[in-house]
Length: 405
Image 1 (cartoon, rainbow, N blue to C red):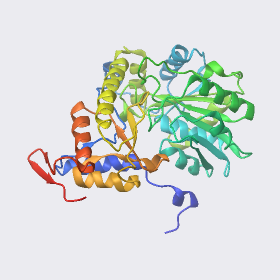
Image 2: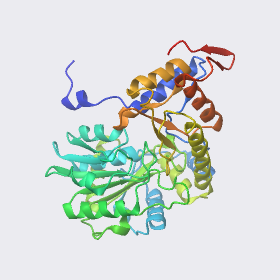
Image 3: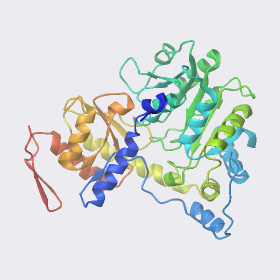
Image 4: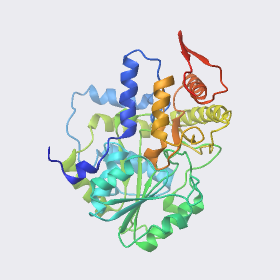
């Protein structure tokens, strides 16, 4: 079969493949625990459900404008003013099928083949392939000191004449690291100086811990006119636990939003009007569900940190936000894909290999599930890896015997 060069360069999404694997194992009745998930288990806000139901009852479920319905744009404008202290107009906003599509159409609107997209390491698994879908070149920028917190120099050293855009995801998937205000300020200044597009992927915006406050990139921008190259990405998937609704957005200069709208119009048209109504309900409704989820996640993080700290060979950095821990398991196995498969095979626990995020030897472990899943899942992992653990482990009525060294 003859495929395009782009098609040949794109790999399957490892996180979506993992979700599929979990569903298959679960359907077979296996006692599998998913610690690789990327969606909160809390209920969707009632205001979102009521808004969806009210519109569904009208029987008028029609096409939506390619850039989003006016009611959702107004809700995004209000959200941007409240949390970013930035007043924008409807022409500065596009609603998409999730934050992922908002990023994708932004990249398609600004990247030419062979131009470069820079992002810190570790990075969300889709960034490299999103660049490749545009015929562009992904440029990961690891921190020289091996931490999750890059210095400006780590980014600046990778800028070339081909660099067109940069993505900053803070708090970060997979590490949970929230970059400092000084770093964000310096990145904004650097991108303006170099005339580079800066995409702030803020999808985990308010899911931050230990009294931290969201960092607003607009605060440090000198250029906020219609030539600004700052793009803010957000959505309802994470902080409102509405992953299945697939509504995200971008806020940017009007010419870029117009170009993104034209691209999206030919790709998918506007997102479902029914799901946009749900997002309006969530954004305009009671916000207590966000704080409730944030508090639950912070508690879950603390439980997971205590358990992982009991391992002799695991190195961890306490997450500042999100619902992920990115732990260094290289003491046990340097090949993260091999280790992840081993844990699925031996103790039915799903994790995501660190190699997919640009750092070998690590596993991304999620704490967005139940405390029971967290504690039992980590206990199974420890039993599989720590040879000082008892030789036998019971999973329900099933007895496992360690037959490996």
